[in-house]
Image (tube, rainbow, N blue to C red):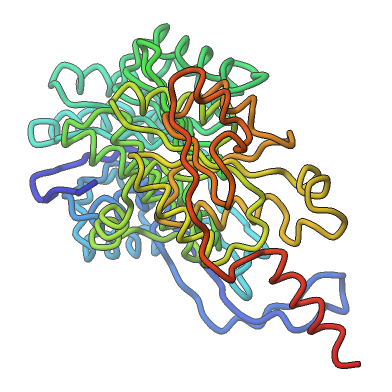
Length: 477
């Protein structure tokens, strides 16, 4: 997936502007006054937060941005405006006397947030007429409108903004908070997280019910699509017509989730400006948010970072899926003519033999599914002391291989039920046995699929590796 030049993209961001202030230092001792750490602050940093961080992400990715919101006529407000304008954000802010700019103070030590304190006051004056006027003046040169709602006062009436944007044929992306979804009626795309969606529609039992509820929201409120952000479970995209796609989270080291939603919202607005369909927009947003959670604090993603990540991913929708998500993904892959290859195993200690085998399997089709035995089934198959690595770690390692598209765990000793549900085009195993000896071969052959047995790299065996480690631990006699 390649990202084109964004120089012609102009996103108008409307929302609550926040100053994120950080105190960094070492926490080497505990206070004598209370059982709390004492942080020796050695560095203070101010960063744009809230809608300001979204605007900063937009320009960092290479697009143009105008930010509309409310700010105090104080030092924090002046600092924020200067920082944003220096970065290339055009600020069209409503300045208020006797109202303090919102500040969120975080105390951080060793890349871990220890405490957050918020300084904010309610906006007592109704400023929506002034906000609507500013948005209306910008729409003639806007390619998308992004409503970043934190319920702090800047978006008291989002419906009025959606109405004028729709009249100007400008797509509207909404990142909601506590308002009922009816307030965002007519938006092109709504990006709730799971907590926000559950608050609006109630809990769901499984992914199928999630899809039903999300589609009902889209239909009832005439919203083009919902992109539900699900933290470590990635994103789920649901269109009003029922089309949907699960996108797994990218396998990255997470240092700080602060601002990840801001980054994904910015990416969604940019890609909506390009006229991309919601699934393609969500794929880019997923990659962008995966980059930013690997950074500390309120951070942004640059255009080159995003371009490298997108070009480096053969598929942006690769990763660990649950069973329901995998069935959906395989069905959609097959609908587009992609050949699905399936293999399974314990994959306890990944070695060169596994890598070569998986690369050879991947060459047999467009998609490679790897099903992995859970911990209990590995113990039943391999004996006491196995697995060496728990299922979550084995899934994550496999998902990081370029040859692998989707990884799923299963609790049974054999993958028979998965094969019956997925019906892959090719079943692959490695070893020195015939096709008729491959577990599940009869299932695949009966519906017309292929079964292939691939060679394994000599001198590569998980059991042999474990034996060598145990012998080394025992030492010489």
